[in-house]
Amino acid sequence: MKRALILTFITLSFAKVISQEKSFPQKPIDSKFETSDIQNFWIAFDAYEDSDKNPFEGYIKNGTAGLQGFIRNRIISADSLLNMVIRRKQDYEKVRDIEEKIKDIEKKVKPYFYALEYWYPYTVYPPVYFVVGRFNTMGTISKNGLLIGAEMLNNNNFEYIPGLIVHESIHFQQKWPKGEKNLLQQSILEGAADFIAELITGTKLNGGTNRYGNKHKDNLCKEFLQVMHGNNFQDWLYGVSGKDDRPHDLGYWIGYEIVKAYFNKAEDKKLAVNHILNIEDYDRFLKESGYLEKYEEKVKKQ
Image (tube, rainbow, N blue to C red):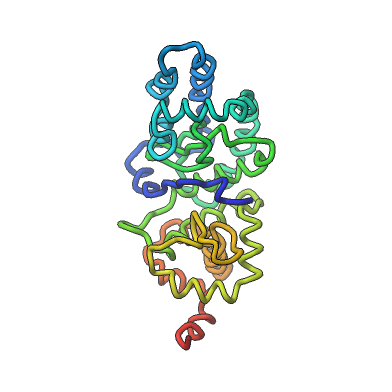
């Protein structure tokens, strides 16, 4: 799965702080899947050709707290959304029946939430908002909950959506470093969400990228060591320069491998999950994982 198509414009800087400040349910049975924004979208969609005003202004004004967190950098404005609807009307029509499929997704996700509770009893369960945007984001989080772009759901990716929701749920539990994050920190944060999601669901979220990373492991590990403390994510997260044939988001792969190595070394696996979600020192975490240890001396010599 190409993560560039799945996790675009990710907003992840809240997580643990928000879960502490807001009162979210602490039991999986109380988790909510909110789809009212989809219903309001279709009301506006069916009215736009016969209306003198932009009906998507009402869609935004009357939207849930989840939709409000989806506007900046995604929907942007009612006019931006209307322009996209005009351009891609037929693509929107393809997901007209998406609410029924979301019910099936919810049935699959709820058991995963119970598994997450087993591994991390301190989990909170914010609402999962299904909103309709401009074909640029499938999954992210805001201070109000998890946000899923319903227009991005199709028959080719439904099998990945439960894992995606779990991935975003894990981001909501993580303790985030203050200030601007470097490549090492962001890669471990993303890789940790992938690793724990796989631990819970049994499904790999980033299969194609993982295969490429494992095939080119030696060169990539040495390259990562040289750039991991910088703030330039290009060629590792959310975009590539085209300098070689690498796929998007290799940071997910190397972060996943670092977390996996840490988990495999731990005697108490549940305690390891707690540590993974509450990392204080990322360099120390990397060292304790031992994953890049054999490459460090080679990089120093270079």
